[in-house]
Structures are given as C-alpha cells and as structure tokens.
Length: 70
Image (cartoon, rainbow, N blue to C red; front, side, top):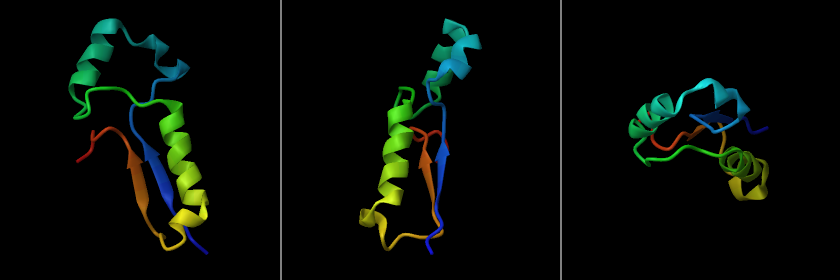
C-alpha cells in the first residue's frame, strides 16, 4: 500500500473570485515562479501519483505550489 499526499498552493479557481486585482498581484509577487497554478497542475500531480510511474514512492507530500513554501 502506497500513501502519498498532494498539497496545492494558490490555484486559480472560482474560490479566488473574491480577490481584487491588487490582491492577486500581491500574492503573485510572493510566488517564486511568478504565476498562479491551474487545476490541471494539481490533476497532473494526482495522475502521476496514481500511475505506475510512482510505484516506488510512498509517504510523500507533493507540493504543487509554484515554490511558495520553500
């Protein structure tokens, strides 16, 4: 049994509609990659961990966060 976790950072979804443009720009400036994540980025990480390509990976937290938590 393999157990892994995906930990998303700031992902652009409808949940973030409450932020103003100024707030979004301030958050973006804090991201080392300089851009927000997309739902597809998280889906790709989950797909990888569910695939046989990750057969020898367990007990890990995969941070999909553009470097926000380094």
